[in-house]
Length: 282
Image (cartoon, rainbow, N blue to C red; front, side, top):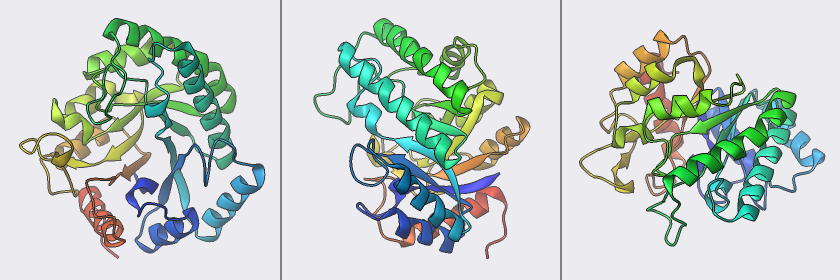
């Protein structure tokens, strides 16, 4: 397995070039980038900007571990507004386009939400309607994913939706495409389940993996803590990943408010991941 770090783990506003340098210095194999509405790597990204990012990665001998985005929180695929759902599909198309250009094999997709407690005023959607709308939206992206050779990775998040590994497995299989799978987040699964069970049930459908840690007793977003400081049974997680022959990226995602956003968190996360993966520290 390869060791990656998500760009959200860095200080807010940090430039991609600086994040790449720090990730390399901290001993990561790759960095997971994010598609944004504006700024660096945005919906309006040009070929020149993409080539500059690729050149920086090449110069640093660092791979791109994945392509995420937070835009699906603003444009949920489950919205009752058809225009918002169409915008979400457009975001997915742009993600796939940029992923192909950057050489990424999987994009992270949040398939909408029934409700989101940590976003004030977010839309609450009937579960049955959410399921139907998410299925329809992802199905629109499948031909683009297959054409680009890039997989759609459905992330398990705190969206009150696709709440069990059995349900997520059914949702993925409904698309009958090897280009639809799971972007499995270990820490997110711990609130109401056991990550190692999710891994065994999802099996080969897992395209990418996020590493986070969580303390159940704390509850809510405050439960997220540094790797190896929470309740995730990482030996069991690693055994489950090896049992399904997973050999792609595991990516640390240390996002606010779970970290103080100092550069040290990048190095701490790298060392913790070395311990989890059984690597020797450099």
